[in-house]
Amino acid sequence: MRPVAHRVARAPASSANLGPGFDALAVALALYVEVEVKPRPAGLLVVTEGEGAEIATGPSHLAARLATEVTGEDRLEVRVRSDIPVARGLGSSAALAVAAAAAAGATNLLDRGFSIDHHPENAAASVLGGLVAAAVVNGAPVALRMNLDPTFRFVVIIPARELETKAARAALPEMVSREDAVFNLGRMGLLVGGLADHDRLFATAGDDRLHQGPRSVLFPEAPALLVGLREAGALTSCWSGAGPSLLGICRADDAANVAEAAVPLMERHGVAGRVVLLEPDLTGCRVEELD
Image (cartoon, rainbow, N blue to C red):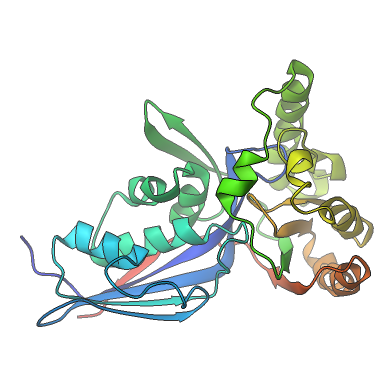
C-alpha cells in the first residue's frame, strides 16, 4: 500500500435538472467545498468549517468515510471547508464526496460521487465542471460535458429551509403521461441548445412537467418566485436540483439587476433566505499535492 500523500481538493456545487432535464442535466456553479487529507501518527481527526460544520466530525462523516475507504488507512487528518448549503438542492453531498475522494488519491471520481447519492448528474458536474448530461448505463454512471456559454450568470434563491431529497423524491408521481414526457423532451432539447448560446435561450426552454409541479406542494411559493425571476430579467428559471433553491439563468449584463430584484421578491412572498449571484464553474474538481 502506498503512503498517504498530503493533498487538498476543491469541487464545485451543482444545479441539477435545470427544468426539463430531470435526473439528466446539471451545471457546475462557482461555490465550493474543499477537503484536505494528510497522514497523522495515530487515529482519525476530522475538522469541519462552514456549511454543514454541525454534521458529525467522527468516522461517520462522509469525507472521513471516503478518505479511509480510498486510502485503506484510518490514521488521517481530514479537514472540510464548505460554502455549499446542505439540503438546498445544490449538490452538496456529491461535491463533498468528489472532493474527499480526490484528496484521498482516488482517480474514479465520478464513480465515487455517484456511489453516495446515486445522482450521476450532480457528481459529473462536480468532477467535470460546466454543463453535463449524465445517465446510469448498466449500473454505472456515464457523463458527457456539453457546450455552455461562459457568459451566463446564475441568480440563486436559497430559502432558509431545508428540503431533503428523499422527501422531494417521494412527492413525485409514479407514472407520467406520454404528453408530459414529450413536452419535457422537447424543452430539454431547446434548453441544451440555448445554454450553448445566450442569444438562443428563451424562457419556455426551462419549463417542466415532471417534477417541479408536484414538488411545489412542499414549497408553495416556488411557482411565483420562478415567474418573478423571469419578470426581473432572467432568461429562464427553474428549481435547483430537488430544491428548495431556485435558479435564474441570466445574461451577464442583467444578472446583478435580477439578483437585486430577487430580494424584495422573496420578501413579498414571505420567504426567508438569501440570494447569491454565481458564475459557472468551468474546471470541475481540482487537486493539489502539498508535500
